[in-house]
Length: 515
Image (cartoon, rainbow, N blue to C red; front, side):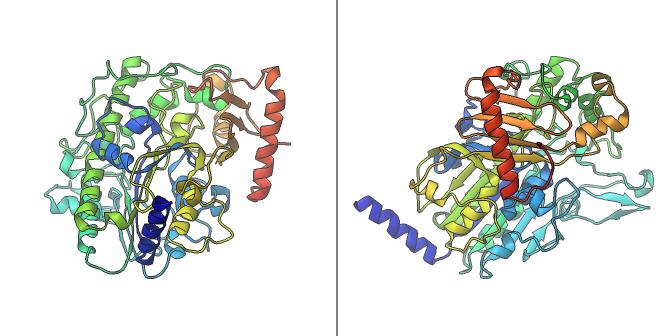
């Protein structure tokens, strides 16, 4: 009884002083890159330490496995079909409120790094941009804060006359800078300074640190940290899937016209304007397993790079004296296939793409590592944060507060999660596999899909123009056997389809997926 009273006392005291909120986002980081998710070989000491004091959600899923839609859900509490940012380059629907408009006005609201989906500085008192400069005509356009920072560090940019119009002269895909000039270093430096500068301020803060790493181009200053021949891989690694959708079959192609190799060739052959700032020469041959291993090893090295600079942010928080009154969230917008099922990047409902690390540290609730079983969607983050700071949760939010889960009063044992794909027209799938025209190829890649992961850990993906997939994640966590045609699963499929229909009705998703 005394322990319960003490926890309640600490909680009330902290809420009276308005907790700070620090949200740390990585980019394209799959769930199995931390020790708390079973990775016993990668070097991530700082995130491991954070996890030791946090709630670790074992099965956290994004709402759509691509950057802008996922990030928008994280910060609006809405699904992509509702907030409107259904693809990269598409902004939120007018009038859609983000976290900056839903937390109290007395908060300092600051964002460093990738924002992606609204008008610049929407609701933030301060925002730092971190995109790479491009050429318009014969001049640099829109000098980002990162570009200016690089110049201040002595990086010499080339004469714009040597570059074609609208090409990135310091392309993201040529990012082989020394460690101290990476975006990770830039974001950590700004965020750490921000925390230390405001430590004496009586106003609470909302601070977003949006790191770019470990996003492609799968190269960086720590290349070679991990031996490609020794990194552990699973049974789906570098193997084409069988008996799956046309979309997943096509994404696995590796010949010269296939998506994977063409992507790698494209991102590593964009304009070279400075020999000292270029990516790996030749890079990865994805027709060979070793090429996939090299790519994966360097991706993991970028996770270690990220960890180092997340550590600097967490050190600053500790130094500021505000760690005990700060909610810390660490997660990512989606994962990366990294050769599993012979897929690359995101845009897939496979676990490696749709499932992410998700840590929440709330010091006045728990100072120990607590694993949270069951499924959770990142659409639940915003209402949970609002609840933790005793702020009213708007009725239109589609996510649910999980504060009671953190308090041990509820669990996620019966929680189904849903995610969606609203199509993309710029992914050229291999027509030899599908046997259709280029227009039909893009039709396959653009077809909408919906997915449910049920509370008992089965996954069903459905689409109006492609074959369905059903995986038993309990006995087949690597998703090797599609059971959609298994007669014994007929009633299960019907039940899960009905749940998708009901979710669509509840969230006003009018995309016609099922009859």
